[in-house]
Image (cartoon, rainbow, N blue to C red):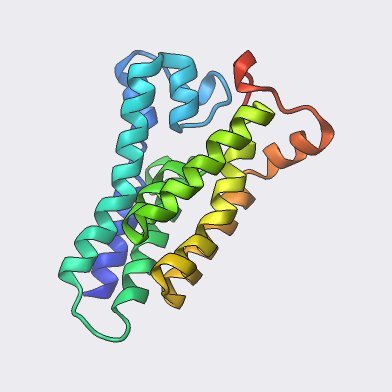
Length: 200
């Protein structure tokens, strides 16, 4: 049951909604803007409607696997760990999609869906941090990094689950790794602000 749940979570997380929507619009989002398949680049290349739709779908493919796993997996001492692993594999699917030759996005929206299931209040706190950081710095990447770093500790304090905290921490680390190029540009002062529609 667990193996099947992990596999399904990965396959669902691998669905590249941003690319699918861009192709329906006659474009390839990987070849425009920042080249990312996530909602930020879809919004930049295709407009707000498809950007919001991509965001919602990417959040859903993180939330649904853990929600279904919480219903289907048997209760027991390891249930929270197994649910957390399903969330982790969903995020890995987005980052390393089997449908895209194990390439993909940076995982922020899909992780948001997973974290939303773990602890909605943690998401509320992280969103405030995200908005403040982006508002002050002008960089969506900086907001994403700050929020992702904070969320595991919020989950630990508010949800009180070590296994959920550990899975959330691994997801946060993966997000930071996927943002390595952004971190480099931020350190060099080369990252462009969302206000100028630069790469994020």
